[in-house]
Length: 393
Ligand code: PLP
Image (cartoon, rainbow, N blue to C red; front, side, top):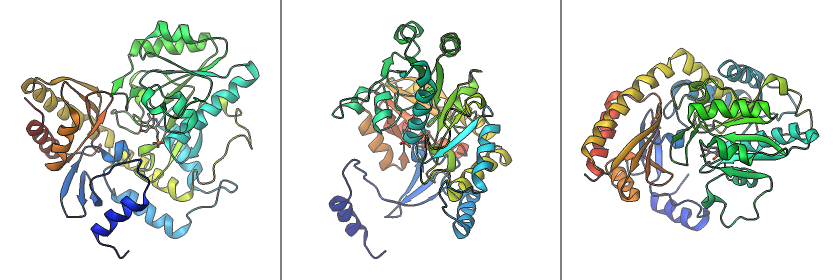
């Protein structure tokens, strides 16, 4: 590529659709570090929005992608490739032993899971899905309709039919919203975009019971909270409540696009040949990256490290709360952390970036921290020191 940084900035302005407003151009990553086009170093507490959970360019994932790219990249799902069934078995082993459909993104995983629920409900006359207020399920039309946060749907009406939203963690509202036409209840075990809000254990147990009693499927969106983010491989595993189906994406291949949804074995025949498909999903290349991710989790004890890193980060953040009155509360699970603030977030995030720390916002007034699960104590110290400087007292 023959272009200077200034030329590229102009190309971005002239030719890339303005759905985002990125301010820095990143050119290299390693572990929890990123470098921009001017050589400035950043500590990454966003991890590509919970995607690079093993850190940037993890050597095992890089090697798997390089090897597979030289051997076979894509064949379509009209043919088998050896990596897809192997990765499906790894997902099953690390979750509830179900059947897996592979796709390319979180929205596509949810879209497929919604289609699964409707197909299951169709012979029973059930098609409606109840989701949570403040939830986020993606930007395609059905996943937008499932999304509880109204601002994402504005301007794209009419909403796809068949979705209603109830307040999160409110059992009475959920029961009241379900009818004989309800085929599924769908929720994030820890809401991400909504503001890092974990589901209440009692609520989840009761929802499972209610769904079982009323022949309603329970669907979990683990796109953001899955893949070790909360300290367990999947967020639901903190609660001892299994879903009928769950979606995943983001960190599944540590940055290579890969999504999936998994259904319990008893639903293996709900989507027979011809009922759902995707050209790219589950390619040899994407699945090679996914296999390397699971092998790294297992062989490098990533969850154990994430647990101790999370304990250390939470302790440091609690200290920060004690010295900054605008910090109201630290909430979340594992390394999916929300710092609830009574302060304007954009200037804080901008000042953190200036000092070399990338972090995110979520919901209203929540500073969202999603470091790689491999983050070191020294990097946590550095990040918290920067937050200490940029958060008002
Ligand atoms: N579901 C949840 C919980 C998410 O956080 C996201 C993205 O942030 C999505 C779905 C959509 O995923 P994608 O952007 O890969 O389509």
